[in-house]
Length: 197
Image 1 (cartoon, helix red, strand yellow):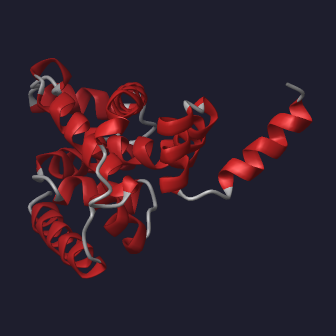
Image 2 (cartoon, rainbow, N blue to C red; image 1 turned 180 degrees about the vertical axis):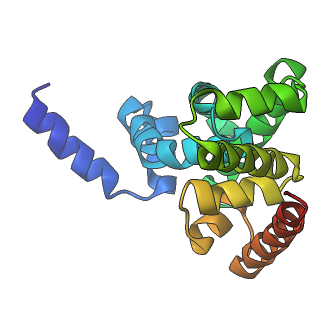
């Protein structure tokens, strides 16, 4: 198929809604319909996985994203349309990312303060740089210590720059709930930062 024809098909598929694409894939075995769903949702699933796994877990977030779409490909026939496709997809992604995070081999190893201080000052040009690095490491540790869903909500909003409405869609929550989670997360992080020298 020529690139021009492929581009036209992509435009046609992009304009179709999720239920139409699902029907096209399930009833007509049209792989392009499934590919259109992947293109539509891949970045959002990746961002959701990254928000749960945290900074520095980009490869793991990519793996989760691939695994999620493999699982969706296998189980798309079980989707009952009781919720939107995106809600169903995001729930699968969230469960998979949380499962990966819980595995001991993906947990950050325990290190004592001396090692962290060494990392913070290893590349620093001066005392101010070392203090900034230590505070960043401490803030990262504090965010990592937050429980779900506060941690991923903080990451989605502040690290990945997602809007409250976008986070609400990803999390299957109301915008007011997301605002409350952000408030609670900021409050806990603020209390923690006040204890730092």
